[in-house]
Length: 194
Figure 1: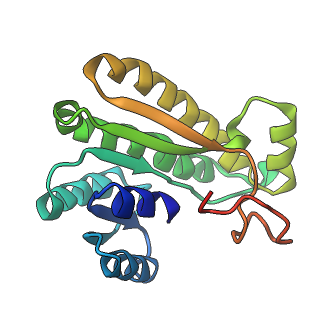
Figure 2: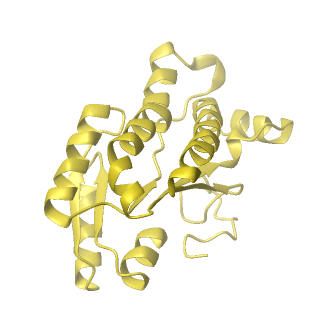
């Protein structure tokens, strides 16, 4: 929400919001349109690469070329010893497959517009015992695996696309965000608007 507000209201970008659930999209689309930010909502399962590409094409049809791809795909958290192969692959399809193929799909216009791909990572993907403990404590081993893979993909895209004039970067959140499911006790001081 804070990122969409920053790029929509403060920077003048039109927004195409992709989310699996229409009922979550509708209030956000209304809010941003009410603020004067041209916004569309496209229900999309981010684990389905073809659905993501179709939504990107629809966004381009309605809003024009894409200069910025902001990726905040999540997945479904699962404890380490309860994960199935499908749990792992589902999350990786969101954080790796769809991100990579969305970037490749948009690359011609990102190059032409000197655009950017920005990704929110998660501290659980860090290579540290403390973050491994955090992921285990919150039953989110799937997140730790997919965020570590996503982090490596972002690094490689950054190196590969920098010479082509496309910036690829990651914001890694290493704390629980207040008001989310990750902060059940309400003790986090990190707010979404920071």
